[in-house]
Length: 288
Image 1 (cartoon, rainbow, N blue to C red):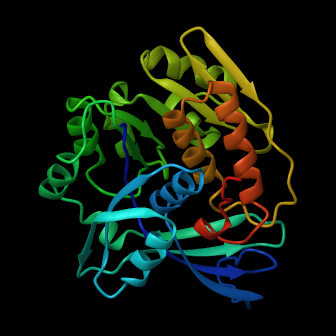
Image 2 (image 1 turned 90 degrees about the vertical axis):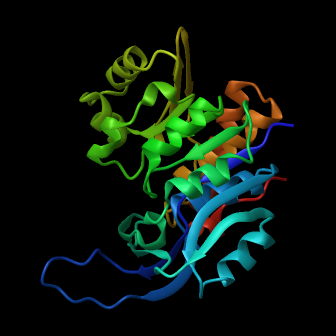
């Protein structure tokens, strides 16, 4: 039976609801304050679980934050590969304005403590054909890609948040690259979606590319196959975690053998629903 491993970040989100984002030199009051758990990695694991598939999460949190493990277990996420360490759990300070847009500061913390020994230990439990989900919020991604590819795992990579180090990763080893327009521009040096896809398909010939375009939907492109998926409409309150919901649902669909169009449509619908609630993981819908 094929397994899904997500080697990814685990964060605590400190969320401040504001009328408008704070400007340099300005002090503002927040309308509301919440602490949630999140991180792109954790969110994507929650989405995979809520989409009805078994998910193994690997990562590191602070020894005093075991409440996170309790929460993940309630969401049916396998936590056997989550280590407890001395560094603070990664965290994010998130402003959400009245339009539902967000502005985020991230501190890596324990997410940056992934060493080779831990990588080898985790990957030893998975086999050829298993799916590995990665984002760019933990360290040693290049090593994880190299070793997982050597094991013939199928790697789904979300290059977010984007930084220049990604340009040094061997993305030809990636099975599926899921990225937004900003990340697409950074990788391709092109601005228009069609041109972004043309460059990425040419650079990474054996990699399926999924370009997400927010309210303009998403485009799947691989070899001679092109699928354009419209976004689902929703009363947006907070866009945090919408992209992670899309990715998690899509990965879950790979295991259940859905056809591409149906899978992308379901992922798009789930992402739209996620924007109707505040928070990352908490806002991800559960499959009916």
